[in-house]
Amino acid sequence: MRTDVTLDRFDHAILRVLATDGRIPVTELARRIGLSKSPTQARVKRLEDTGVITGYRAHLDPIRMGLAHVAFVEVRLSDTRETALQAFNKAVLAVPEIEQCHMIAGGFDYLLKVRTGDISDYRRVMAERLSTLPFVAATSTYVAMEAVKEGPL
Image (tube, rainbow, N blue to C red; front, top):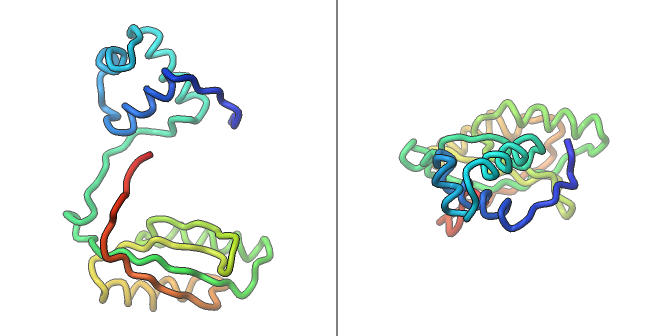
């Protein structure tokens, strides 16, 4: 997959519109960005083919789904050799409560965004899942009180 995709103002306009409404008809998308239908379709296809657009999905409201509790967890590993990192990464993918996982350059190794129903659910997930991930030496939890900004780009 190419990483050197050149995007012009029309491409950026397409991406802004699709990020908020992925189900918009091509004719309406074309109207909004100021191009005709055919070039707009070609641009969308190119953005998909080059991996700039990776897919389309429904945006879910986690609070209405009973998942209002958000915690950010710093994770320090006991081993940071490549095999340990790979084992940790693979194990994280199997924990549905982990919404995001980022390897960090800093005072800890990973930052996790964990979403559960409430603090008791989080405590259970921490005890049964997070603390048992491979090579976890220490964790620190920060509970989010309010989401000021979340969502697509």
